[in-house]
Amino acid sequence: MPSDLIGLKEGEKDDTPDKCVGLGQGVGGNLARSCLGLQTTTKDTRGGAAGAKEEKKTEALISERQIAEFSPASPRSALTGAMLSYSEPKGMWFSLLLNDMGPVPSEDLEKVSTHRWTFQGASELATQGKSICYFILCLLEIQRNIQLDQDEVLNASLLEACKTFVRCQCREGKTSEMYQVLTHFISNSHVFFEWEKFLLDIFQDSRAHQERFIVMHLEQVWSRYKRLTNILESMFDYLDDTFAWRHRLPKVGELLRDHMKRRCFSSPLVTKNELFTSQAVRDETLKQVRFAMGFVL
Image (cartoon, rainbow, N blue to C red; front, side, top):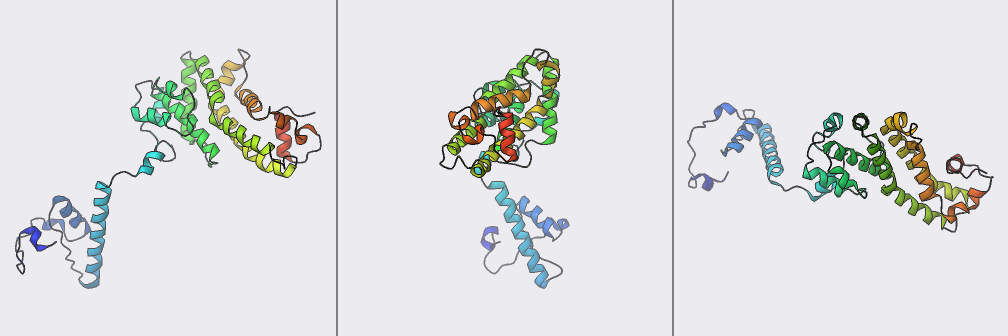
């Protein structure tokens, strides 16, 4: 530390006794002195190169601590804050388990409204309570992770919490409301809009009659559709077991398949494509799509 900052003239020595001698001369002691606003000591009983190395290490640690305390938040952190892969809202898992319908923090509502894959009506649903807000946020994250081809569509513990939330709502007599949430999400999910646009561009291509070209792009959509079906069937399995069959309503998988066919495979560009009208196809993915979407002759 420069001598003029502690009231000494040039050439004078500081004879003030060290009142914090008990802190020692190591890294921890110097960090404590820095926090107290005292002069840090770099004296090391080992001397020589070891002492110099210790001094540099202490200065680096103090510098890092100061940067961490006073640096403003990165703009990128605000963008990724809505993603559960980076930041899960406090108490999210617990609120889903307990079916907590208390007031929703404003920052959590903002995560829903500003999410890349938010859908029409998501914010209105999220305002009903903390648990439904976090449930909607999980649905948004499912879309994100599927579209970005993440290894995990939704954390296993969060998936179980979401299933528990659905069961709690149903046992409170809100089974029809949960079925409505499911159908509303499927009808307004952005992934179907994106898949539809992607497939239309492919079937408008001059190479759309080539099986290899179609399959190569079709697999990108079909693999994501299957992952979405699996996760939603697991999340809403209670509706299939206790509600859909009793009221003769489509099950989760049937809702997804019908919506997928209507949105992505009902265009004349698809229905009149020779790969969907002829019997001579060899690729297994193409056969699965034709069978599931009702193109089997």
